[in-house]
Image 1 (tube, one colour):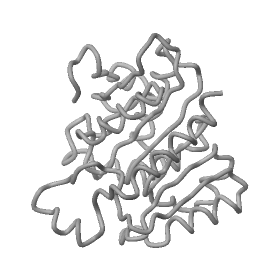
Image 2: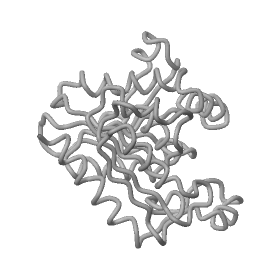
Image 3: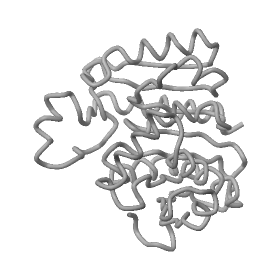
Length: 247
């Protein structure tokens, strides 16, 4: 991950162990130019893990002025070992993954480079986590093609302002944008949710992801980049964070 361990790779293992989280926990830190302090962003990767696409997402947020730490939820053994337990945490709304996310957030806040304002952004699996963290001490959340939690009204009551980007051609999450907007309206959470007509799942990725043998299937399922929709979606994310974190 990244261009060098001194600049980008963050070892969160000691803090994670102390908190009862994963024995090994790492992340990729992307920082704006200058000394700061900066508003901070916790970034949560897709189901494929913290890959080069996630790194570029983090660098994009840093270029927009945010101290961004992309946590690797698969640090303790890779996707094969960690994926099932991480997804179980997501479905249950509790567990080690949430401890790891809390550790990552606290690292950012204690880094000496944060203004104290902090947002969370997630993609795919990470979007689901971002939804569940939106009422847990964050100032703003960006949810990109993330699945609604079980009992969404209870999970999202009291959440911070949320911007959401979804694809109309996403066969994994049909109608999810409208469902999320309706829930957030009912519980009185500030939100801006949009479904992009030409986009599918993972449309903010700037390159195909996942195992090569599965990519033809992903295309059938509407999974992959959509350069027509991505620029507007990124503008929406950056505008949302600017309103709520740069104040």
